Image (tube, rainbow, N blue to C red; front, side):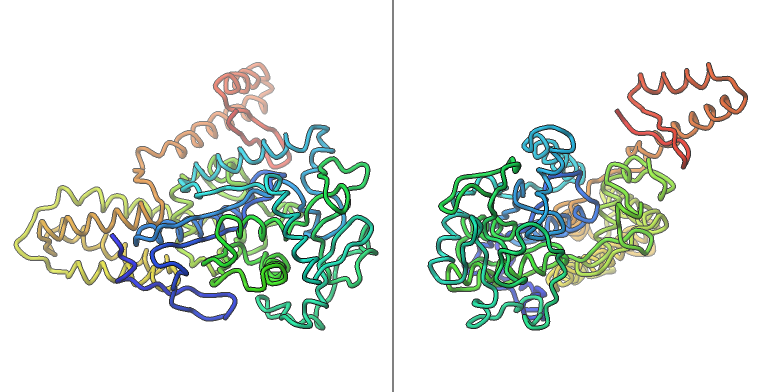
Length: 493
């Protein structure tokens, strides 16, 4: 059903800084590209939040009847340290430290990425291209930019000439930065001296003898620039112009700014009609950072094996917590916030499970059609999931009142209410109908913590035989205990 004809959507466009009525290039079809992960480490929880936001957007566009081609890439080469044009490739560096092939690193962390997203009930994208699978396309794109006079070659590398481009175009149109005001923060590292100007960025980098990941090109052996990859892959599968480009707020500059410049330099037109950016995830009011230790990964949050949270949380509870903030808002991850979300999540699940057993009346005391449209109005307003959830809680309250006899509901309205709740809770928000009894993570975490306390008591009493027995038998059961300064934690083998 083509609901989109009756449910116009407004999207906040980062390019214009305003909400705009969404009109796809081709009626009934949507092309959407989202910048995927650089697979050199386990996926960060902040990245999960970004991908979850666009998973919800993908789900809603499909729900209202659009045929969506959703492209989300895998960066498996070319992303240098600190997002700069100098330093070491992130994947190559990890491979060197672990003394294995770079593609072993790519495989390990691509699998981890998919496993985590599957755990959180993500829909797979329509296409998931890799940077290394599109070297030819990137080389051809560089040729176009060179031929149009917006790039230059030096010592086997090719750089985009930002100053030349800005003479006839607006470099900074997305981030609202002026070229003359840009301050270059990159340290002087290998390759920086080749640039005409510090604002120029690499389209192709010469591979030094020690660089493992390298490909032949007209300019010598090298590897593509990080910004170039997304331009090549997005336009290959969605066309020179497409509807939506998404990513984290941190990618707006320079990554997305450079994408716009590359496409305009090569194709003569801006590539995207609607730029969308998801905001960051904080932990206890502070930015997540490995260097400060203020970070938790998805597995640790799911298992309860961390120093920040009092218990384990089910994937749908975490997903529900993230949906309670608008995708453009900063979200603060806290123990109190997750516990509150858990209570709300189970309240909704309990309510929807009551529907089939409600006594039908001749009339309904609430207009279900009006309530249903309020749910659509929320999502049509730049995918406002917090307002949607507020409406879903209204329905849960109404269901409980019908059960108590203070409100009434006809059989037909009960069916409509159930269909609508299922659509928004499970199809759009991507939640799963898990009851408290079915969620065994709390029980596992609680049981293991009891055994950890017994082991600590045994050690305090110098009963090391019992202490070792508890540790060894848990290991046989697939639960690994880890003793550290913060105490004893556990992980699943």
